[in-house]
Amino acid sequence: MTSSQSIIFFDGACNLCNNFVQVVLTNEVEPKYQFCSLQSDFAIQFFTKNGFNLNVDSIIVYENSVFYIKSKAALLISSNLKYPFKLLSIFKFIPTSINDFFYDVIAKNRYKFFGKTKTCWVMRPEYLNRFLND
Image: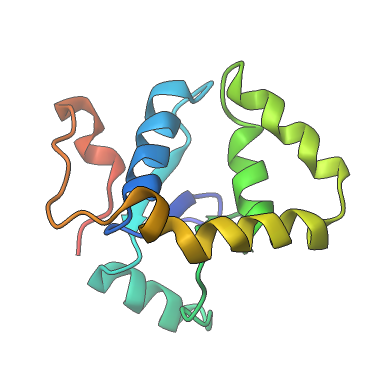
């Protein structure tokens, strides 16, 4: 692990989260992120080692030795994506408490709105090295 490493931790059982990862993979300006399911042994060990409480209902970005959660994580990611997804970064000018309110509404209802998956999606071979294994 390097301190400059950028990792997106996501809910591997969530359809919305899995689709979001696919959007990031296919729309990054440059390949920047690695990905890891929050349910993996790697994630649990990583958070324990770094003193981060994993009991968070959020996508988590680890970048430059800093953890970003909720809307801050989503907006950080969107700023590294191609148009039109980059336009979402305009919401960084709205107070975090307001952005997080809407983030929380979606996060709490993501399984109801988008469902859960019991199987992993089949990724293209060129993306395999972007995922951190257990």
